Amino acid sequence: MNLNKTQKRIIELLLLKKTASKKELALEMNLSQAALTLASRTLLEEGYILSEGKKSNGKAGRSEELLSLNPDYGYFLGVDAKKSSITFSEMDFAGNLVSLKRFTLDCELLDYIAKEAMMKNILGMSVTYRKSLEPSQNEGLVMKLEQFNIPHISFVNNVEALANVYHFLHEEDKNFLLVKYGPGLGSCIYVNGEPIIRKNGTRSEIGHGYLSNGSKIEDVVSFDTLLGKDIDEQEGAVELFDNKEKLSSALSVIALTLLDADALLALDKIIFAGLLLTKNEVKEHLIKIILRYNEEFDTQKISPYPDYEKLNKIKAALQSYLDWLK
Image 1 (tube, rainbow, N blue to C red):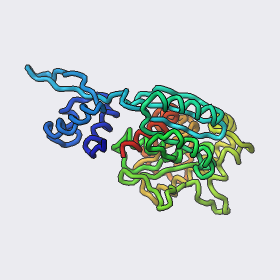
Image 2 (spheres, helix red, strand yellow):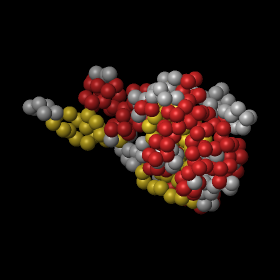
Image 3 (cartoon, rainbow, N blue to C red):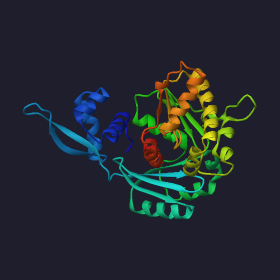
Image 4 (cartoon, rainbow, N blue to C red):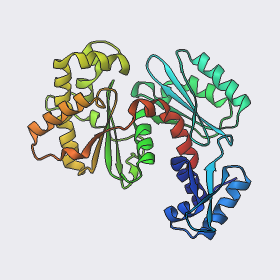
């Protein structure tokens, strides 16, 4: 069935809250309880949501019906394509992680997805990719994934997926720049609660700017350049963290880049993502460099991506869920 905006919003709120009463949902959505009841009735009848019984609201003789998402209604798959491996995540309709696996070969991943598609109601799948793993360079894999007849297959840049997940979990943050460092320098800008996307589908990338010597910023600070070898985020973050001189050099370039971005965009918030920038020691080092260049900079607007390692692993599956809700 086609869900209307009100029904989709009910699902979104239950995904965030896990359980909520009709009264709580009505207040959150600025609806009357009668309107909320009408919108939720079809969701209950079709099995999207469940009634968890009633709870007392503290007033004599009154109780409120609790609603939750039905975990068995369907499943969302996430494929996170890295240079040396593929992380697969699976989420049920209630937002619970039911599977998290790592594959090194496409055939292993495809066999696993085929088995899941035969046994479960798969509602969607998202593939998140790095710059060097864009869909146009993986047409064979795309065709193999499409053979499973899974609806809502989407391909999303991994940094954009991180920003989308962050905004879903923190709706109050409408204007922010998400910066991910490692192995390259990626970014996504949100303005008025929406990502800034060009007509050709690409995003503005602060790493694609240039230094005064004509060098592209990302090329200067990438793990490959600094460490002299093709390396993934996990290994590169460890090596660069131990090499304080090279790390400090990279952070100086990133600091100036962020100051330029903030001056142009008047940012409300800057979110640091990646195994390096979410380390408190690295974040504090970068802030010191920023203040060295501009002592009036408001450092309170900088914050690390919350639960980065956990959410990075499941971002593709959650992105699939968000795509389904559009």
